Amino acid sequence: MRHSQPTNPLKQSDEVARSTLAKVTRRLLPFLFVLYVVCFLDRVNLGFAALQMNQDLGFSPAVYGLGAGIFFLGYILCEVPSNLILAQVGARKWIARIMITWGLIASAMMFIRGPLSLYGFRFLLGAAEAGFFPGIIYYLSNWYPAAERARAIARFMVAIPISSVVGGPISGALLGLDGRLGLAGWQWLFLLEGLPAVLLGFVVLACLTDRPEEARWLMPAERQWLTTQLNEEREQRERRHGLSVLQALANPTIWQLGVLILLCNAFGVYVLGLWLPQIVRSLSELSDFMVGVVTTVPNLIAAVAMVLVGAHSDRSGERLLHISASATAAAVGFAGSAYLHSPVLVVLALSVAAAGLLSSHGPFWPLPSVFLGGSAAAGGIALIVSVANLAGFIGPYVMGLLKGSSGSFHSGLLGLALASLSGAALALWLRRSSLLRAVA
Image (tube, rainbow, N blue to C red; front, side, top):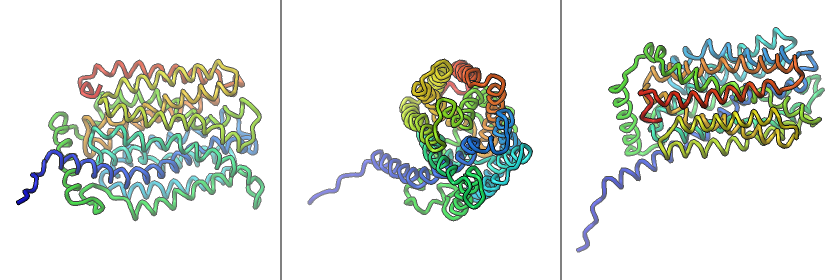
């Protein structure tokens, strides 16, 4: 008589873990990726619109820089309360609300007529979008165990460079509609690129699942494994730290993460996002469409680097050295782009800078969840983003002032190199923190 072999419970558990995480990744990451592509494109498509809009409306580099940066004032003011609301009402409803309102405002930017309306629309766009990115980071922490988060976040955040890879040629082509139906090309750009956010907002409302316990697309054993795993991590974290929302907002490590690391990184991310088309245009007299094509190069290289660095950080379990090395690469790239003269070499140097800047995000974003959970995580993550987004206001505006006074991007690029190098040094310094030593 043939006897069945006993089931190995450890092997069975591993199989459940693999199948669960694979399903979560297939179900969530591609969709969230598309949402962030649309989000980031609506945030930085002003950089492509400026190729026509600045001349049509007589905007100086300083006016454009202030308009680009003022987005982040609205974002900062609404970021923490928006993410706290998301933690209470659920990601599905709140992310849908964010997307619908920001999409309507993004399309309404076609009605910009002067500096005041530029500043007003950009401020409202920032206020409407506030909470989206930290909300998604908080959301992913409710679906991925700590050891898997850097890879998941890096895959999600590849949307930043891919938004330019996709959006660059599309934006350049939309500018080619100049004069159709009496609208300027930049007006067509704003009108048409804002609509996908509105449509996707309704898709979010219909399709997004708030928590693993509600995921009917997982098998019962998979739901149980994921819920148990995340609950155990949450209990361990609360036993070690147990911070309330107010304690999280006052925690020095939160401020160190936001001010000392992400702030330095954000200068480069947002200046490149909002000024790269004009930097490329200054290198040679390319058409609007070809400017869009060339801007895809740094972003494609950055997309590959993000995935590789995030995966390596998860495999090694190390975070802060990865962040420091990435920031150092960004500093080298910016310094090179300031001194090189060949357009090809400048674009390659900017590619190194973009890869360094964006590669740090995968190792960075698992850090807050090491010691924060629940509403404290939502508030703490939002605070980090809010503080770092000061760079989104300051960086593009200062770049505009420097470009207007000197006529070149040289000083601004050197400033970005210094900011990135400071971030690299500060990441090494933060490794001494006892709170983060386990992941350093």
